[in-house]
Length: 88
Ligand SMILES: [Zn+2]
Image (cartoon, rainbow, N blue to C red; front, side):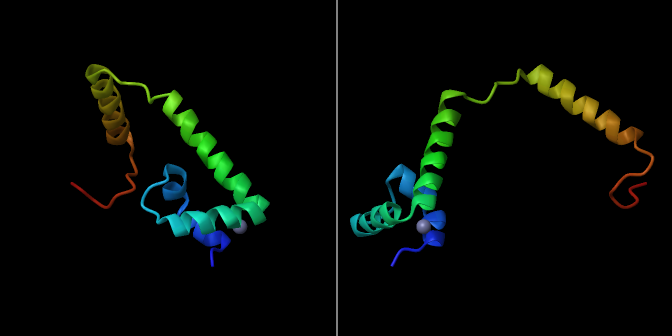
């Protein structure tokens, strides 16, 4: 018996259609057929994945990454009340 939380647990495998037996997939489809919220959930997730594939994360040139890292370090060094314990 597939329940809503099983759909959530198996969501990524369900969308990619791998790592699940044909029987599980069939049960999932049956649940999705009877459960509009889950159907909507899977639909949105799939949509989100497709969107993520279409827009790859921006590549940061190493010098820019280093500059950001440097700025962050400076910012941390300037903080008079570091969140971490005493470090000398
Ligand atoms: Zn459901």
